[in-house]
Image (cartoon, rainbow, N blue to C red; front, top):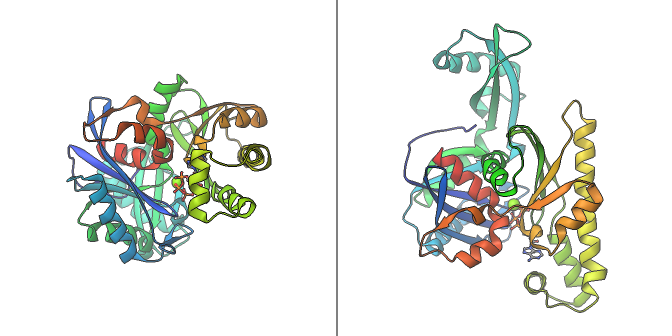
Amino acid sequence: MSLFQLTKSQSVIGLDITSTTVKLVELEAKGDEYTVKAFAVEPLPEGTVFEREIKNVMALSESVKRCLKKARTKCKQAVVAVPDQAVVTKIIDAPAEVGEFDLENYVNDQAPNFIPYSIDEVALDFDIIGPDHRAPDRQLLQLVAAKLEQLEDRTGCIKAADLKPKVVDVESYAYEHLLPIAAQMTGFDLANEVVAFVDAGATTTQFNVLSKGRLIHSRSLSFGGKSLTEDIMRRYGMSFPEAGRAKRTGELPDDYQHSLLEPFTEQLSAEISRAIQIYLSNGDGPDVERILLAGGCSAIANIEQTVQSITGLDCQVINPFESMKFAKSVNKDRLLEDGASMVVSAGLAIRGLM
Ligand SMILES: Nc1ncnc2c1ncn2[C@@H]1O[C@H](COP(=O)(O)OP(=O)(O)OP(=O)(O)O)[C@@H](O)[C@H]1O
Ligand SMILES: [Mg+2]
């Protein structure tokens, strides 16, 4: 699923615009093997992005330029994503005899019946799911409509950084693109298992359910590692950057583990457990069978064990770069250390290579 597909090329940049950073991963594909050509993370000035909305396009494009420089890449093709909040998706049906070419007109005609915005305010795209098994003369389509303003903010700022937007995706689809790699790494059955892919970041935890390799549910939880950083600041009288660094190095007083870290991992696990219950109570979705955990918070030692004991589900941390090759210029150890927080960038780059 994407909103534009422009050209095919050798290597592609996936660009994740988060609440506090820009994260870049450049990938190249040979067969089903990926090589990391470059990566970089650049912090955003305070107030650039708020609740996933870009508040300062100029500041963002300057940060993207710095990020490109840091990554030392010459690649110009980039994939960005609009946040799920800016998108409406809907499964609709169409007569089976309408061919791929005419479906575009069909979707344009039908869209106003399904989308709660004026059709002039959105960009439309669709994906053919396949035949409707309940009605042999119908086929199912996934319709996606993204708010133009949010889409243009993103494409505008990457164009200003001298990049070409190859694809504009929807953020949660990045997890779908990564799923085959995650299945290969952990040995789960992609074709049959239902997994929750949880990306625990700084301000949000993205909770996604995927069945048979497709995204079927997605929710953004307002909980992330920033609350632990703020607790460290308060308890030990540190600045925000000091607390962030201490969290990574573990250089904190002895009571940190018991007083702050354990309650945080328990709360995160409880949030995941609650998200699963909400997903199940929503309707007829299949039971979640395992959890794949990513995001900066997945770097907390043994976090998967706490998640496992609170949710009762098998939990594995996913670092997609463990299965990739690296160009000589890439700092492999650094990327392997931080890889679980770069899942969206990696998923977007993979989308650009499809
Ligand atoms: N080794 C570590 N131990 C504990 N926490 C860590 C570690 N490394 C990173 N973090 C925390 O992970 C969080 C950042 O995660 P991530 O990079 O996935 O967030 P983000 O994608 O920038 O934010 P968001 O998706 O919420 O906009 C921060 O709170 C950071 O302190
Ligand atoms: Mg994130």
